Length: 331
Image 1 (cartoon, rainbow, N blue to C red):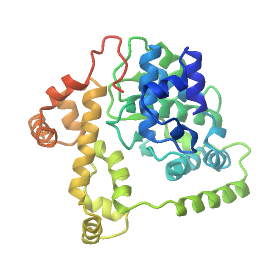
Image 2 (image 1 turned 90 degrees about the horizontal axis):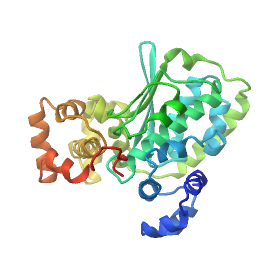
Image 3 (image 1 turned 45 degrees about the vertical axis):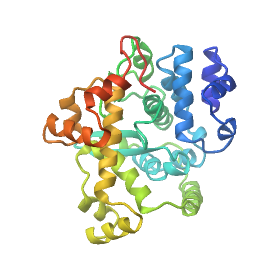
Image 4 (image 1 turned 180 degrees about the vertical axis):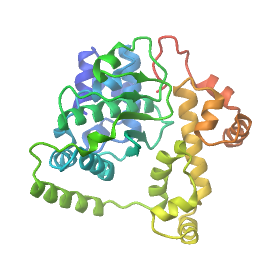
């Protein structure tokens, strides 16, 4: 929260005034974990009031390993960069209940993604670039201050001024993407972290596991998180989810039914959320969005979206996506 306060102050905005203007309860910003939706509302309003389309980027730039608390300490004392990123992927929920980090490797290329649980929520586009800027700073702390990715992917339309992005990332930045991610050589994952202490790592990991054990979550909540990252990878199927949960398909269905839902309902919910995000925050075509969500053709996506929302995706976009000429992402 201090980073947001500082950036807003530097831009001439009054933090407390913005909180009041947004109609938010100021008490929610005093806790260790600030609700994702409240933070998104504040980022969106702050970006609008300051005229700063890259507010999320500026906030993310202030992140350090120390700002991540125990997770930052765990990463600093991991054996390799890959170990550190996998620790971030596995334990982010201790620090951030609003998003997931994913690490994937494709041949000689690694992709570190950042996915808000509620991609359609107000300010999600700002959240995404904030998360990617933060991840960049973490990698620079682990590798070298001059480290740069091969490219950066952001799920938002390009603002009028993209210079701040190039200046910070020092790499090509691709806007209007399906997800937020850093792309870099997979060989980086094997790089040793200087000064890492295995004893400290073990001690911190044990403390984190105790914190995780105290957090309660249902299978429905866990699957919602899983599906958010998988929906644009065309891997939303019950068999795969069951394998990852180490149960068979029938057991998965029974447990979800006991919680009042089903895999199909959760998968559809994930598709609808991501569809709204891509329609509002990017200029991707209907064909590109339908392909990203694994529909056979744009017509199938249009039919499904109408069933979910009662309107067509084109009409929904017109109502929810502002003019992009020099605009900010929809908050």
